[in-house]
Image 1 (cartoon, helix red, strand yellow):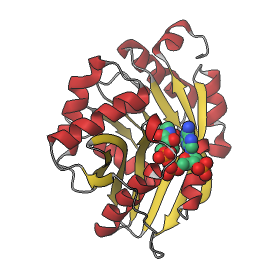
Image 2: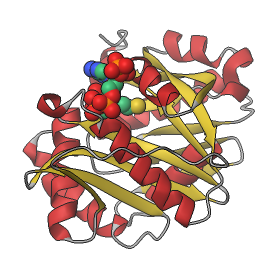
Image 3: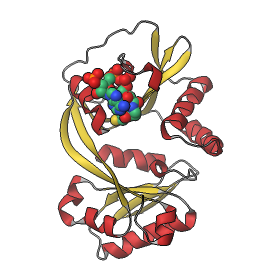
Image 4: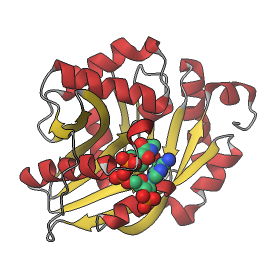
Length: 259
Ligand SMILES: CC(C)(COP(=O)(O)OP(=O)(O)OC[C@H]1O[C@@H](n2cnc3c(N)ncnc32)[C@H](O)[C@@H]1OP(=O)(O)O)[C@@H](O)C(=O)NCCC(=O)NCCS
């Protein structure tokens, strides 16, 4: 969780994002009207948690933005998940927290016709953005904001975006973020026609290598349930599930549970 928290704090320094931070709660929002770009990433000991949940939910409802709320291992036994559900947030999924030491090297395989490289220029950033839009089915209305976000990312020395190119076309992506000795892997995606030939593994491995060169000794990630086998093959082990709750502005306005 620490890597996720550090990444969102960094993301919140994007001039168009806002970090709301207190010792008890950290959350951020951005102009992007999509849940992964708005959310609560650290919940501490709150005196009146239902009130705080209602306040954050009301804030995003007024802004018209969906948002997420992650239940970390430290929140597990405290009933936070149940309170989020009764406040009308829906349980999106349990992503699997996984980790791997870099003491053992990764094995790398060449994939015929596929070139894997870090984003170094505007064309690379544009390709990465296009795959983000495809992955999350983001409307073209977000393009300008997403472009601006990537301009900010261009200057982050510890954040590496990786792309797989097949015959000059982008087919996969991943990113790594190094915080101290720990690297987090984010945003692994292969375009549907290119799946099943090792591209997901290759972009993840390249993002890990970049993090290793920046001093990382251990890698963490949160995996969709379907991708767990892929990461286990790469030597990752399950650490803990991370339940993810999502609130939509519509549900927040009507008070009804989210679909
Ligand atoms: C997960 C994903 C990146 C794998 O890409 P890929 O290039 O096919 O990966 P590889 O060829 O290296 O490995 C295939 C593995 O992906 C996993 N996988 C297959 N279909 C998947 C799907 N629809 N969603 C998630 N994972 C899938 C399986 O573990 C598969 O392993 P198997 O061959 O033993 O069954 C790709 O399916 C994807 O983009 N899915 C949607 C987004 C996502 O789930 N991202 C993962 C975030 S942690």
